[in-house]
Amino acid sequence: MLWTIVEKEFKFILTSPKFFATFLVCSMLILLSFFVGIQEYRATVAQFETGQTMNQQSLRERTTWSGATNRIYRQPDPLQIIVLGVNYDVGRFSPINVWMPVKLLESAYSQELIYAVFRLLDFNFIVVVVLSLFAILFTYDAINGERESGTLKLTLANAVPKSTLIVAKLIGSWIGLVVPLLIPLLLGALLLMVYQIPLSTDHWIRLLCLLGLAILYFTFFMTLGLLVSSLTQRSVTSFMVLLVSWIILTLIVPRAAIMIAGQIVQVPSAAEIDSQIDGYSKSEWEKYRDGIQKTWERRNNELEQVPEKEREVYREQKLWSWLEEDDAARKTMQEGVARYSKQVKEDMENRKLQQVKTGFVLSRFSPASAFQLAAMNLAETDIFIKKRYEQALNDYHVVYSDFIQKKSKEGGGEGLRITVDSEKGFNVQIPDMKKTIRADEIPQFQHPKRNTGDVIADLMMDAALLVVFSGMVLVGVLTAFLRYDVR
Image (tube, rainbow, N blue to C red; front, side, top):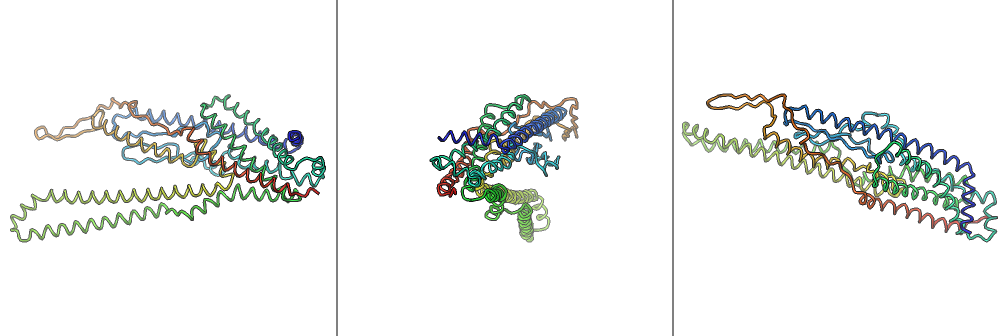
C-alpha cells in the first residue's frame, strides 16, 4: 500500500507545474554554475601558470642569491567550481624573501570588485537558497491543501493508516525533487569531463559526499513543510509560516550567531593591538635610556677619585667593553619587546579563532549553515584556507631563508665585494654579470592538501546535525498528523 501511494504522489508531482518549474530552474542554474565555474577555474589556472613562469624567469635572470624573492602562488583546486567558498577572498600569492614576512596578496575580489558585490553563482548557493525554497513549495500544501480540496478525507476513508500516508507523501515529494537535482548534476559532471577538468578519485568521492549533504539538507525543509502543513488548516497560512521560517533559519540565524559570538568572545582590533605594543615598546625604551643614563653616571662617579691622566687611560681601555654592555642591554630589551609583540599577536589570533569556532557552533542551529560549512570543508574553500596556506608558507619561509643564506655565504654569484688589506689596501671584486643563479636549485613549495578521510571525518558532525534536525521534525510530523482533523 505504501508504494502504491508513493507512486500516486510522484505521478501527481510529475504532472504538476511545480515539477516543470523546478526542473527548468534547477537545470538552468546548475548548468550555468558549472559552466561559469569551469571558465573561472581555467582562468585561475592560466593565472597560476603564468605567475609561476614569470617568477621562474625573474629568478633565472638574477646574478646574485642575496635578496632573491620567490613568489608562491596558491594552486587552484577543481572543487572551487562547485563550492566557491572564500577562495576568491584570499590572496593569490605571497612573496618569499629573507627579510619579508609571509603575506597573501591580491585576492581575485580585490581585482574585480563587482564580483565581491554580487558574488559568483555556485552549487552551494543553489542548494542553500533555491532547493530549500522548492522543497517548501513541494510540501507546504501537502496536507492542508488536500483537506481544502476534500481528497484527504476520501483517501483516509479507504482505511489507509495516517502514518503510511504521511511517509508516502514525504517519499513521493522527495523523489520529485531529487530527479530535478540529479539530472542537471549528471550533465554538469559530463561538462567537467568534456572540458577535461583534472578530477581525481578523491574529488569524485567528495562530490558524492556533497550530493548526500544536499539531499539531507532539502529533506529537512520537506519535513518542515509537512509539519507546518499538518499544524495549519489553510495552505496560505502554512506557506507564510514556512517562508518566515526559511528566512529565519537561512538568513538570520547564521548572521545572528556571528554577532553573538563577537559579544561572547571579544577580540581587540588591530589598532588596539598596535597601540598596546607601541605603548609597551615606548615604556621599555624609556627604561633602557634611564638605565643607560644611571650606568654612565655610576661609571663617571667611580672615576672621580682617579687622577685625570689615569682616568682617560682607564676610560679608553673600558670604552669598548662598556659599549658592548650597552649594546647587549639594548638587544635584550629589543628581544623582550619582540617576545611581547609575538605573545600579544598570538593571543589575538587565539581569541579570534575561539570567536570563529563559537560563531560556527551557534550558527549550526541553522541547517543552512551546517550544510554550507560542510560543503566548504569538503571543497577546502572554507575560512581556514588562509591559515593553512600561511602556515605552509611560514614553514617554507624558514627553509627558503636558510637556503638563500647558505648560497650567499658560499659566495657564488654574489654582488660587489670590497675587502681591506693592510698591504694591498682596498680590493674591489666585481661579479660576473653574465653568470646567473641556478633557479632550479631552489627548494620547492608543497601546497597544503588535506586528506580526504580527515575532511569527511570533520563533516560527520554537520551531516549528523542534518539527520537529527530532519528526524526531529519527522517525529513532529507524525505526531501532528495523527491528531489532524481531516474534516
